[in-house]
Image 1 (cartoon, rainbow, N blue to C red):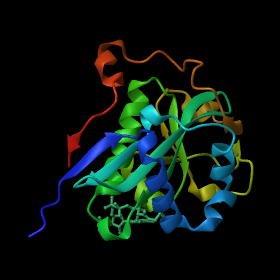
Image 2 (image 1 turned 60 degrees about the horizontal axis):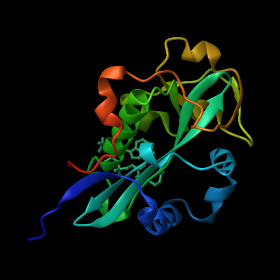
Image 3 (image 1 turned 90 degrees about the horizontal axis):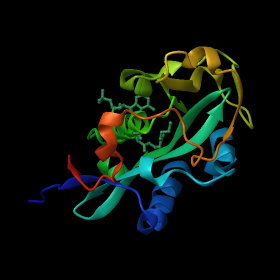
Image 4 (image 1 turned 45 degrees about the vertical axis):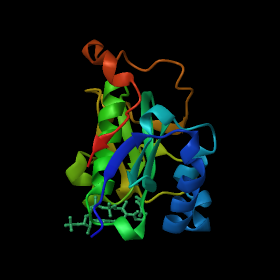
Length: 190
Ligand SMILES: CC(C)(COP(=O)(O)OP(=O)(O)OC[C@H]1O[C@@H](n2cnc3c(N)ncnc32)[C@H](O)[C@@H]1OP(=O)(O)O)[C@@H](O)C(=O)NCCC(=O)NCCS
């Protein structure tokens, strides 16, 4: 009998090709035209906050995080999130979101923002952003713009455009006690 050995790892360049295939399978060619994709085209994602899940060494799911300036909030845009059809409904998507949000908090991010389904992301800590508070570089359904507010005044400052930002410009100072947590994630058994 096949025994699943799920591990969650920090993304690196060796995962690029398979992540491309996973996203192609999940979203098809239309993925490049979405408003969130247009932000991601503006600059690279942050590999230290992006994660994959592997089953017996085969990459079967991915989440990426891209540094953004949303109004005056220095946060991260979560996505794409995709799980291969063979591995859906096993909690892998939720776990990748949880890991990415926790990593963003440790790095001092002020918010994790995404465009997605509220019923899926609500239980993971995402709240609705005020309608049309953020101007995306393309049309979005305002009911699907969601945020995990990390800084206390996040909602008030989420007003204006959302654009890629250079993550080398530090966000708020991270929790000093968690210095070791900035190391790449090697493996968390799932
Ligand atoms: C959406 C996706 C990432 C979920 O990953 P997953 O590992 O299958 O999901 P999980 O096992 O963590 O969660 C499964 C639960 O979420 C629910 N769910 C899945 N997609 C959902 C959605 N779009 N809206 C609401 N609930 C959803 C499932 O019904 C299931 O509910 P249950 O626990 O009550 O049975 C995956 O289905 C996928 O890759 N889909 C295609 C790409 C996509 O839509 N990505 C999200 C973009 S916003």
